[in-house]
Amino acid sequence: MADEIVIYGPNARLNVTINGQNGDYPDLLSFDSADGDVKQIVTEALRTGYIPGIGAINDPNLRDFVVDRFPATNDLPPRLMVRPKTPFGEPTMLEDVEVTELHRGDVIMALQDLSAADVKKGTLGVVFEEFNAYKDQGGPMVRFMNMNCCNVYNHHVRFVRR
Amino acid sequence: MESALVFNKHGCVLFWHLPADRSQGAIPDSRTLWELLWEQREHLGGVAHTHPWNGGAWFSQTDVTTFAAIEQGLGKRLIWPVVTFSTAQYFEWVGPNELDYGVVEHRRFRLNPADIQRLRDLSR
Image (tube, rainbow over all chains, first blue to last red; front, side, top):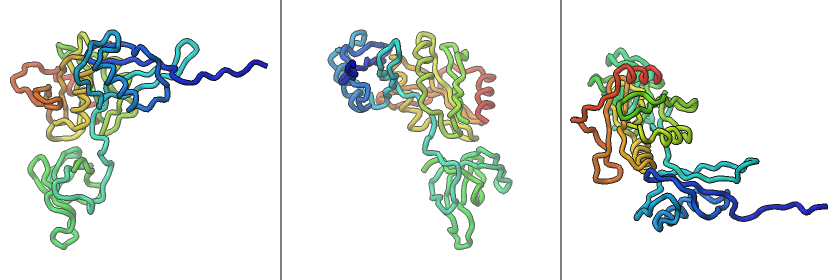
């Protein structure tokens, strides 16, 4: 019975794109290397110009780069790719908010038309008085982009940022 | 839903970026988008994206770090319009620091208004 062959150690090719240049790191890496380790290896390689096709970079900053992983196929070995990140927007944005959780300075967005302030759905505003500021259970006071103000209540607005 | 369009140096649309997993607050990281930007790097002018609300157009911390990362990857500066339902602002790197982006008022470059409107419609 033939022994089962298991390959340990570095097995993945690493491709890097930066400064409009693209190249393969000359050595193999472990496919399971942590993102931070991969970026550290690439940072040092970039400083010394170790990657063919990419000129030396004095102070490379890969903080906003990501590591993509492509498992092996029948034709190709496993591959790693270091490239810039591409997201946009505010991932911390919440879908809804209890108005009791809003504080002065919070930016909110109207989830519906608010006739009291002549505000259309989707308009931004800033909280300037918190819930129950006058001991009357009134909702937070918001000044909207059209400069009108009104109290807001649950499901009227969405939190945008603090 | 946040939406994006990629345009060339003349402001013509190269492609719309409308991933299925985008939301009202974010467009997630996308290898597909990066590969398209890389393929088009010779002709690329920039990427516009929406913040689907009425009000001022400004970039988020996520946006500005993405602007800088993509420019570092491509080795070239781009234009980064941010579009809301009521306004649009064109951002560029103004320096001197890595994340110093601002509006360049004198720039004459503008996207086609019909493309901006389509971007807004795709964001509703």
